[in-house]
Image 1: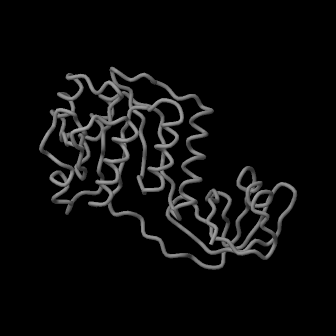
Image 2 (image 1 turned 180 degrees about the vertical axis):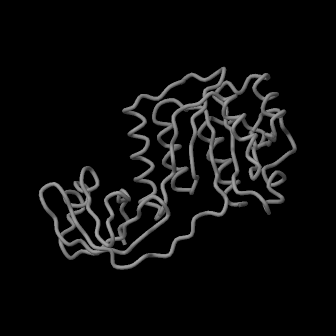
Length: 240
């Protein structure tokens, strides 16, 4: 059953309205019409079966039939990652949303090539997250935040009492992700840090280690930003 995002502000009681790009996709591309049934989600963890009531020139209205079962992950995975070049970062956003990552926070490091994201790109990234969530039948949306400095991100996660924090590091040879996640009894957040192509500077890794972030290995090969990020996320999500 097709699964589409509806902004929660556009859901009132048992009725919903679609406008903009989502409307044009449903009516113009998918050719849905009055009486057709679809599934919708509000990005907050709620998913519904619904029926289209009317299709107008610039909007579509519908009615919710019933709520669908969906359980949010018990442990939220947040990816703190350097920004990969070009379309590689868009690819990473899409795949993380499909996997169930809760949030991506771009980080600025000493060796980062890209240190900012334009508003146009930021809006595009959010649309990619929505599309991937629709495709993978998520009822929530993966959040994408604006870039933060690496040290500020470390300071933030180090204060989380219910978190497990890790940083894949090329100099770590024995400590695997499984070792870090042996006991998840009181864990509600898992934070993963991924560095830029040139890696973290020594001062950055030393700061991370001193602030409750554990180095892990992803194997012997040196991986690109998006490869390392996705590999780490898969290992963590499968374990959690």
